Length: 273
Image (cartoon, rainbow, N blue to C red):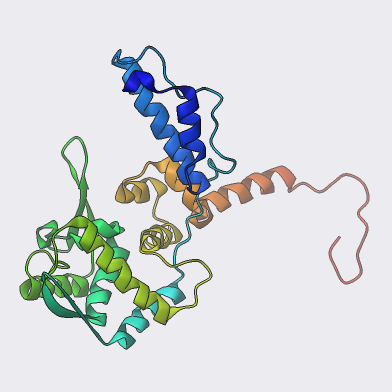
């Protein structure tokens, strides 16, 4: 029962979690939030999660967001062309998937920054002309990502061949099953395209989407809206790809240090004073 939990129980449970430091830190936040909810509902008089229970060192470290380089993206697409046909079979049926399937999946990810579950469950109804609906604001307004004509045509052709759910064909409709299939397929592509300096994952397509926009000078606020994040989060995770940031820092230093120092300057042979 809830009132049987003690701080010793929580300490024992938490210390036994075999998780990475950031995941373990988030698990502690969840524990605190759950028991705070119980206290607020008067189910408990106080939380058994003691105040001196701390997350592991490094739990608050900002996750490094590493996008693919343009060269890596080219290698990934080229790997799809070498993939050939891969057959599958299970209780739901039999079939095959190809490099063209993978290119559709990857290109949709690169042009929309959708997460892997959203791409896997993508319905052609989200495509309106050249715009893909990303999400809806709480006020009811929708946010769209533009895709080029050639990709729109590929997706529409795919809908004709496979139905409205572009990446679900003759397979289970269970989210856990279908979202496990595509990472395994991507793994084959990444193996062909490697090696990579950082472990390749689908989520890096989302980071690549942000990197490409920021490098082209798209305002941080607009990138944040497309990602469904706040501006502060985008600046924190993608600061190195924000040109305006470095330009602002350069101007600060230039304004502060431009004046020559007082006194006589020593001339350096072959160089500047």
